[in-house]
Image (tube, rainbow, N blue to C red; front, side, top):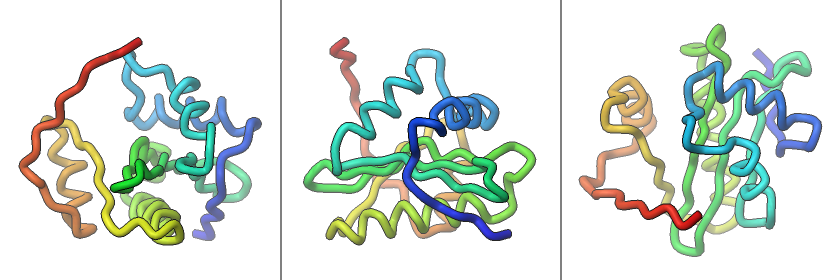
Length: 138
């Protein structure tokens, strides 16, 4: 596997949205196009895409908020899951943050997704026993 990783381009958006739906990371209450546009609005965040043979097979949205780094939408094409691409995309996201001087990274895993939690624990992430509260403003 020779995965090329780069920032998303305009031409990639529909492919990334399809990847998010196929891999199960998209949720009906989130607009993927809006999330991508928001991540691309300035230098504090981006969407990384992983390409194999010119085809997008992986993604990770990464950004920093001035205090911590965050990773979202880690998605791997269903037929490529469990092949090491998730680990590679997380390394790329962490590298993106390190280049910007970020020393701490967080991510959210749904409470019922034990498989994802196990994956991230194998990468050195731990449950902070924090409660995430949310208020939708728009």
